[in-house]
Length: 266
Length: 287
Image 1 (cartoon, each protein chain N blue to C red):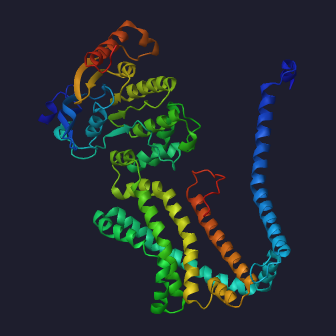
Image 2 (cartoon, each protein chain N blue to C red):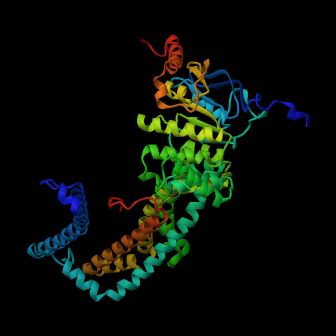
Image 3 (cartoon, rainbow over the protein chains, first blue to last red):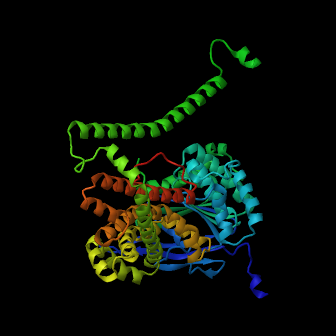
């Protein structure tokens, strides 16, 4: 098998090449993404951080094969993405739970859709829910769960089939800061246990630095990758590490990009 | 008990507070629930008394505005007749309603599924609603005579539109993320429909079904007005012709009972098919 000669360690799982997205409008074309290129290895945690309107959500949807690009391409394991990818789990900013299904049934939707062995899957769904602190809430409908709980259910739903790739679009954006901290810790633990690659969209610098192996800084109008910063902090990372000088240094680096581009003004 | 006493220095223990709050809340809930039944009942009784006294004091002729007592007497006297006519009307209503569902929901699915179909049929359907359907009732008598069929047809014609509109709206109004989610799970479009779109549309569909059942009652009665030889609508016309106003009132009451009963049945089905929605005390929905 000569094809196997490619070193698996170095060949990227996801490749985004020269991706542009342009919307036509009455006032002329709008550039949402301007020649964005990005690579992600298996098991790597990559965050895309940037202000609202920099096209990061659009980028994620194109990477998932859910939206079309105007130019450029997306490759997964060297295969061109032409339709919605199914090798992944997605967590949206909104939990997107089905309100007629209980927490467990919502997680199980993924298993039903993929025709997994339902007995095994249910066992796993229960384990996952317990792992994010939702033991005892399996049979509750979303309406009686808090915002943080709903988002946890949706994370479980994105993970039950053990996808090699997890896409998260500002998953903690609507939550209070304590819940965010807990979920960030949970996410770190779960992803390192399974070595899932995560493409994580956020506008929180601290969240990006805390979770990532690499942070991609995007700036708007047009949406463009401005800098890519490798985060070389030991794992598992702890909340206390947020106070460390190294952490502060990385945060500062990202902040400087935003200051230099006039996204933040002092 | 022992540690409660030891902690007791004139203050209530948290357990005691808990118990008190729990009991108070439960008592309040029971009171509220009772009030919900008792107040409308008392208001109804009060209204009947005012009505009864009003007609007597003002000496209103019975053929003009009968007191409730006269209506009740007439209803009791004619109970067999009312029951028989109610049965006839019920069959018309239910048949018309069944056809509305059988045609309306598949039509809505088709409108949703095939854009060409929706672009051609949907505008026609909506503009057809400007036509007062009651006006075509006499035409149906000409075409189909005096039997069951023209009444069912009119009931259907009036009732099916809200089912179509609400089903289409329910199917179309879905967050884009839910569809993205389905795609990322590899669901086929049929499975997406079955697992996500249809249950998502269910509240809207039932809203349509509830409007439709009341309209089906109207349709059946209109059909009987125009060309009937039986049913409550026909009986109303007969009572009207013979100036038997108490019977007229009794007939209206019977129709109201039918309408409420059918509406309630639809509501029960709705509740059973959507167990995730808790029962709400909201009764404003009853048209």
